Image 1 (tube, rainbow, N blue to C red):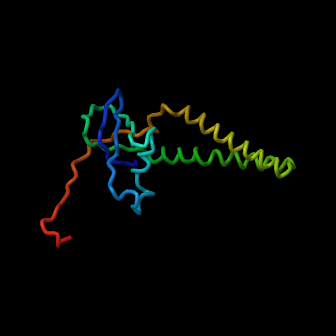
Image 2: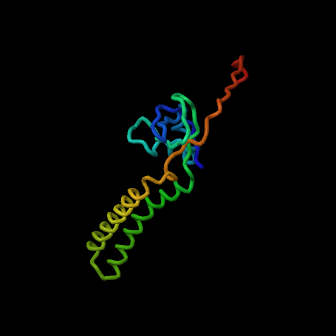
Image 3: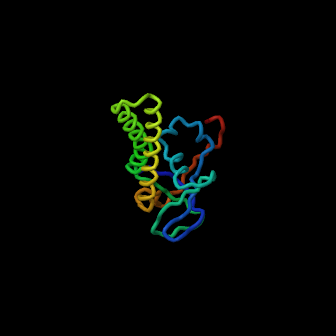
Length: 157
């Protein structure tokens, strides 16, 4: 499960809107490729504000910190659909055109048609699985309060 800490912004039936808690150095972090923050910011968001709709069965208070997550297999499956299916369409159409002895401009055109057909299959699949709760972020638990230790002497840093 890819998990991220967030704050509840609003409630609706069966879900909450959450904004993930961003650290100021997130953009320059070396671990950003493996971090769930960027992924969860993109999932379910239709604006640049980073709001995520997370499914839940429980009632939460506005402002409460929660842990939200997405199963790793859902991320992998979604990435495979988004990247692999269009490429398979492109290569299948190009290789079929080559096997039929088409000219190079015709192979390029058919490869583009295969790519577009792959995108169409991805869009069809997305609409088909859009209501699958396994593919949406979910509230896992209440976040425990973070403990911050502050030294009284700046020389200790």
